[in-house]
Length: 289
Image 1: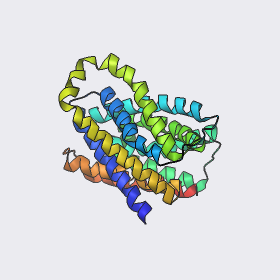
Image 2: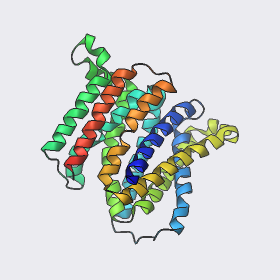
Image 3: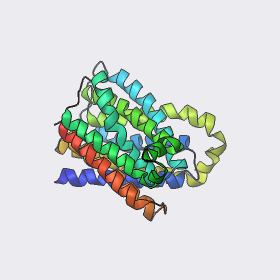
Image 4: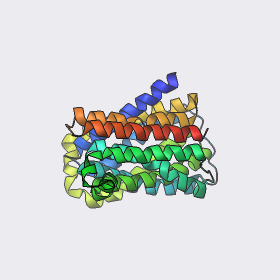
């Protein structure tokens, strides 16, 4: 059960990172945080290159790295923007829509098709998303769904979930043409390089803050690198699908921490809704085994 302890640690650290995102967005913009997160994660993971076998990259590695890097750079920025303008306890569960979008993108990109059990999992995700905004039901039966599209942060999170459904496929191609650790370091370094021009263009007036609060972004990178390390070790101990499914429970942790740390409201319906969405993710995961 070591893999489970590692995977649940990843989920918890993911939610801690999101809370840290929310608090640090008061001091730094999404470009600085996104660039710092990916750079320091790659930096702290890079010593592993001395202990692992450097793989011979396949012919599809570089294309996958370019596509995943560009899309993830966009997704990181949008996700941070969504957290900044909306409650974390709403944004985090919406990202579990990624498996739903994967049922569309995976057949097109890597030729993987869903089965009937996977469709049941999608249904749970839809039901859970309805319960996230169940308090809006008095405005009409479709109001909870409409709330996702009327709230700007929710719309951005939904876009991020779709982008992640694309990058998940490219990440799979990248790992298949290298190795998990090598790909993880490569993709985080690539994203940081791609975000650096945005920092220099969009965040020039805020760079002076790094002199005083830059250490906080280093801590940020440490949290994420520990999470990534735990994830990679867990993947080596069991099936990838199991690890990613457990990782999605970060939505539940985010709802709880959103209430405890950020004093967000509506925790009961959001916890119930996110719980059902996570159950849907588990069902989809089982359908792929």
